[in-house]
Image 1 (cartoon, one colour):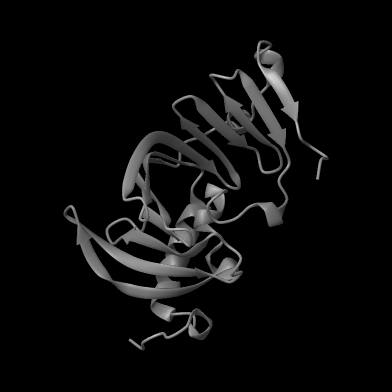
Image 2: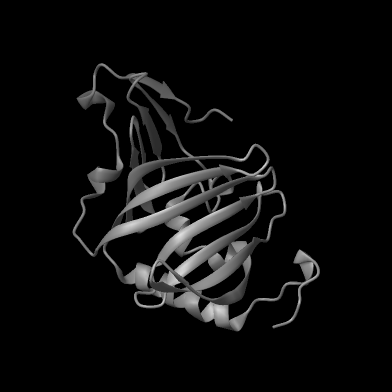
Length: 209
């Protein structure tokens, strides 16, 4: 494998592209994807590490993320961010330019080709599972991360570990487990109805630039 001196010299790696295509094709054929996750945040400068757990639900370009004390719903157009302790929900309509690979989990499995250059790194075994390790380098260099590492299970073609390497020395790793695939999920699952939660303060940011 050639040594890459600079990010601008990276060419699309056919071996990585083939695996990513399989991942994208599989997800496009599924009715839904649900998984538990652990989010690990590591600050390399301060030598600190903390983690939190949650649940992720995907359907086409819609998603719902539940963590202790919060929930984010996105129905493909509108995003609701609900904070339980504050009893408030913020409503926004993010444009395509506002959604990156990390802020919108639905793009994790569909945005490889247009958003990144990619390179196959190696086969690796972690906790008894064999993975394809792939590096993704953002096309737009103003992203807060220098690259994203994706570990795709060789048995299932599922991306089970996704790690962003931050330019500021803070890395974020998502470990996905307990996948439930292809269930029928109502579109209402990806919305938050303030009328059903009358005690919640609504902060409507739609139309505000």
